[in-house]
Image 1 (cartoon, one colour):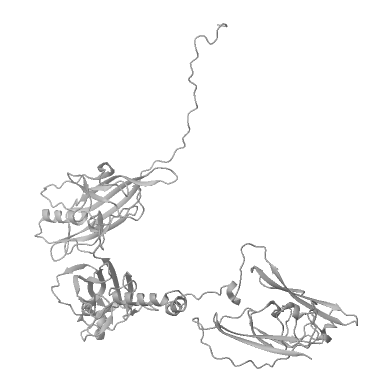
Image 2 (cartoon, rainbow, N blue to C red):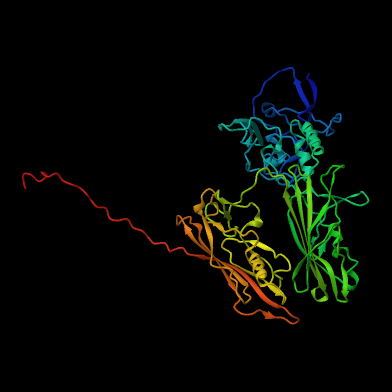
Length: 626
């Protein structure tokens, strides 16, 4: 008489898993302990294993329970048959991750040679679909051992073999043994199947960054408190941050974005392109126009569109309005000459169709300068515009847009150098003036040694020409056109032209190295000039200025440093009368040029002199021979 007891334990929510343990106890009248590793071939085991593409067992349907104890598994007995219906378990909440981690299957669940589902594979001893009739046809086990992860400190190994009985039948012998790892660095336990490898992480983009941030930070300790702190910090910070879209205030009180036209997929302008905070941007795009229709009606051509903008100092609701100041309006003619216009207050110039094929006061270039504080709040905003004439021959219209950011409240003045110690090609020359206390240098980049930057048709005296800093190692040639009336004062014109060629507040000294200190006047080289303004009966005006800069390589051959050894200013005056133009007056081209001349001597190999022996012997050294 046998007694069978089934005891079920239900453990809920342990490491996010629902686990049901079913223990079977069998008691018989004659108690006997067996240690045989043999599984009876009469037991009909039908096990279906569904495997994913990656080889991970995800579902097991058991029609015959497989004991977990290796000694019990090797016993020959009839096992109770359980139904395929699983017990109804109460619904459990999912873990924080939103899904249950996959279970770690035992080593007896793996069968690498089981290639066909529902069919017994030849010589596959671990195949659950094989019966005793199939085993009698086997010649051996193709896979005799199946091991677990060898990275664990102790892992199970399943052994499979075939043995002939006394009656001549083949029986399957299987056992599971635990092997210990001799490696010091091993894994003690594994509770997740995918814990030994990591899937390819999703690359963060502007679309999925928030989702990834919420997914991974939810597992961090104290994430709720940090989320609250970051949420409060975001509300406390009212200034803009990097790449934030700056906001504007409309006339109706609604908020908008500060936009800067930029080319899209093609070269055509896209007017609703937002400008990001602290991201200097420069764009060049074109527009197709019909002059007689778009000259006075298209907003993109009008100065009002780029001037009547009210920026908000911050992101908060009660942010102050930062007015946009117009600091410069330049009118460019059809010959590309530019003239500075005096625009007072909020006065604007609207596009006007002067001729059927010519539109005046069209916006050609817009430059925004935005100053901000260390807290990210806008302090001041200004705009400079270039207006011009557009004809049918110049279509499509080319427009330039630029936005620059400059921090307002800088603690200490930044002194910029052009090398350490030698000059670097492309860096501006370090220049200064000599005073009674020593050398002095202006921190304003506009006060450094500079050259003209204008076209040959630019009027030299009509408007202050634009200038660019003198860059080391880069030759340049530029100029402008001098137009004089008959009643012009020659001496006054000569002085004005000298200021145009040399620049305002022209420095007289140049540093020999890129980091020459002000405390060492010997490292500063004076600019030599032989030009002397003389009073002559004829009109003698300077027509060209040439700077000749001589430099050499100083130091080791492995790492030579560029050093300026001399700079000479050469000014030429007109040797003949000026060219007369129709209608009275005269015209003369004015040029400015810079050249860098290397004066380094070629390296010569040096050899040390042969050593000489300077030894004095005592007077009795050769006694008694001498």
